[in-house]
Image: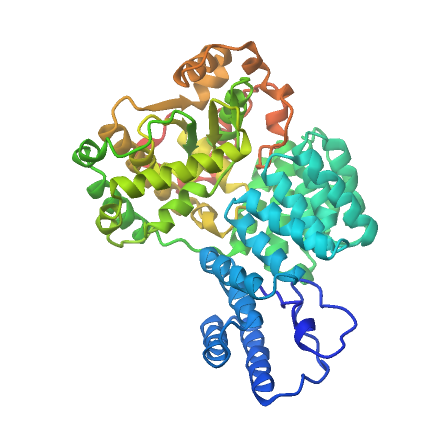
Length: 557
């Protein structure tokens, strides 16, 4: 939940020295409100709404904002607060409310900033950049805006443009957490790992976002001997002030160092503790029902009857599969070709799915959503998607979206783009699951926090992929991680041939490629192909029996 106080309160209150910092709760003793009974009543309700938001009573907060709008239509601050309530829950709704706030007060920098950040959450990077730049035109030294613009450029594969923004933010406020963490993240994405490590150590020395900084620091290198940071991390774990989220980050950081040092049992103990501290729960039964519905809806007959609806463009390439299955490596090999652009992990396809009422992992009626896909609508959605891709690389012949969970939407991909290339990355089931388990994913990946649940989820992923291969025979290229590791050139040539492009030797030196990488694989993808991650699970065999049992016949010896 966003607990962000609209700094726009300053607009509606008498002389206030400075707007509150973003993401800070309102301070007591605010000055008296401007005269006018209706304005006073509106302001009182909006104050109450913010208090309810802080207590996570979101529906009650929303009701108060709507009451204000009934009495004072187009109240910009009510729209703004409604937008903050939607962030992280319904980003499309948040986008609409922030847009209405901007329309009412186009000179308010905070409204533009929040609208830009909402676009950023939806991977609409060009629009995000537009509104955040507008914020900085109105308020050039707003640190939050500088950091948000840096994040937008990182998302837009423009790490070199993000770097000076974080540097400027630190000159204004050297202890701002977003700037302190944003700078090393950008450096790491550009492959400047040593500099990123130095910046993170400085952040830790200043006691700023310590758990997050340690978690990022240990990802910048591989440890061959015990570093002093390990003792420090283990000390921090005992500090209850870091909370459950901080504890999770620290346990995962300790696990990563111990894994590098081949102290596997200790590492797994920390990974388990970190996932337990995260507290995520996943409704596996609901997901099974959703997979059932996908299989029942997306039949061979459906594709045959609607095959002519889609756009014939060959521009889109979707690299997908389970997280940690080799999607980043695959994208980097493809994107090393001069005619291919790697766009990273885009949420655009999911946004299209949401826009047509496509249920996300729920047992809603998929048939109703598919029925709305008339030839005209398919044409509009496809052309809009292509325009979105072309914003990133107008001259590329192929643009790669490597959002792993697009494996859930392969049916939609082929309805929109019958000539799209879909590359399915598959890896040894246990290795793949262990690689998920040892990372601190966000709530969207709560299936990975428990070994048994993770194994059962993997079975559902496998079941859905088998269905796609059955109803779309020969259309999906399966890229086995182990095959790629064993014979890089041969498999890379197959990949480029599948894309319909001539071979280029640059694809063998993907690790020398310029550009930023913004996934958990930032360090690995800057290295030549290595084989140490194959059969990695053997190191943990005695600790992961619940996973092995859950995977059942998907386990390969």
